[in-house]
Amino acid sequence: MDREIPNPFPRRTCFFCGDDNPDGLHLTFRRDEASGEVVTDYAPEARFAGQGDILHGAIQMGLLDEAMGWACFARTGLLGVTTGFEARFLRPARISAGRLRVRCRVDDASGRDVRLSGELLDAGGGVCTTATGTYRVLSPERRAALIND
Image 1 (cartoon, rainbow, N blue to C red):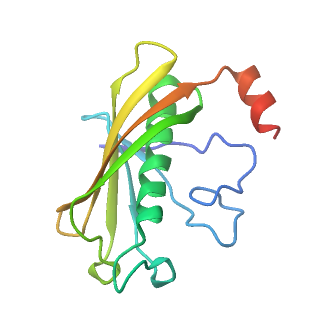
Image 2 (cartoon, rainbow, N blue to C red):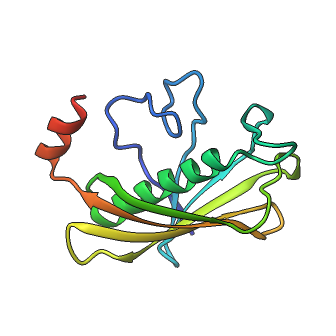
């Protein structure tokens, strides 16, 4: 069963998850209680095309990066910042094919650095893009000083 993760950001201006960003994607994230994965669905928009009908790779990477950040938060209760990220493009993520699903999981959370992995799947469940990332967990004080909300 999925449980929606409440948005922890005081300002709602994030391009990916901010409700107050008129140009943003307004994504919501859920945690699958059985698997521990964090999931979001996204209907790709033509304005984010790379070549032809393919969702631009930077948007694909951004979706995965954002979902990993939410997976880090869901696991630790603290916000993290990306310190490393690597993506592999396996097949085209076609805009016309319908909704995409992003799912991410924590692979290791034994210290200040959280290691994660994720996948971007097409409407048929085929894996389009995979990614791994490392996120540094921030104390509430460090986050406040860094972000300056």
